[in-house]
Image (cartoon, rainbow, N blue to C red; front, side):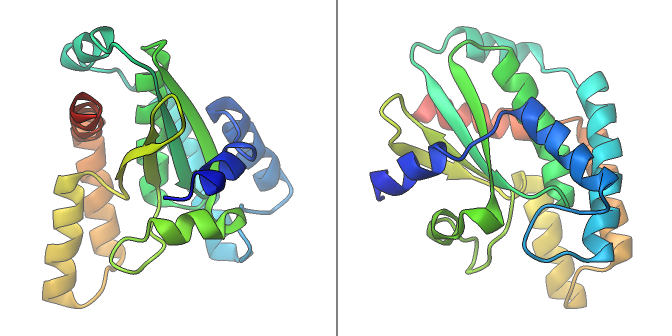
Length: 199
């Protein structure tokens, strides 16, 4: 992996709080993040902003996650590629933020997909620019692993539904949101922590 590309991308990162503020400002101007400005993207951005407000208030990390974080003996950066209109990101970024807040060993940084095309193209999912994508970096900014765009259970739901129905429709998207709400970020916590332990 080109370390220059990572360093260049890190220069363009914003914090989670800055990201939340930026999305709210864009929404107030009738805009979304990303190159493509559509009513659909704006509507998703509004919905996601409300979801993230709720998750920021209600999400808690598990005791298992906290114990794992307390036992980390080196530092990591979660470099996350995303956009404000992405439904999966609205469920996952608040979880990552809670994990990062619970440990002084984890730094959480965000870049926008459409502004970092070269980076996104290095981390495609089955040839597509699926987000969010989490890059796990060591203290020298080497990429140790990547994760995303969804937890394993949600990814399997997508694959199974597509193979049966050809594409994802509104019914599926509602069912996926129900799953995220029931899971409360636990699947995401477990998978990210298992990657940190392996690194």
